[in-house]
Amino acid sequence: MNRSFQEIVELAIFGIIALAIGTGLLWVLGHVLGFVGWLSTKIAGWIWLPVRFLLLIAIVVIAVYFIWKFIQDRNSAKAAKPASVISGSSTAKAATSSDASSAVNSDAKSETSSSNESSNDE
Image (cartoon, rainbow, N blue to C red; front, side, top):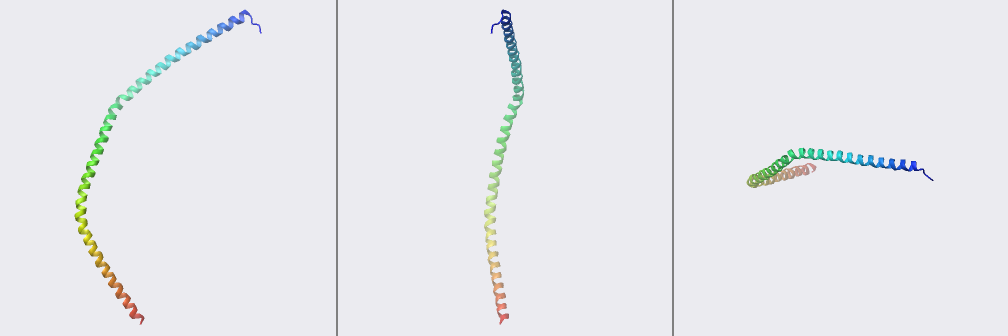
């Protein structure tokens, strides 16, 4: 495959042109990406500006909420405990005595009805 001097020169010139175009595209792409990077940095800065204050406010609000909830739970536990102990003991005694009297009454009724049934059978 013998090439003429003109073909070799044309190939060299086309190669140099391709390298120049490739280098130019990389240069332009670098500037475009640099601009995109700069723009992304600016947008991230604009987003971060309010977020850093909102994040601090959110942390404080969450801390206050959990402290408030802890205090409310502790106060309601203290308030509920003595009331349930005092009323629970008297209620438990009343419930026990009423249950016992109900049980006695129901036993007496069942014995009376069973004796009546046995007398009816005779």
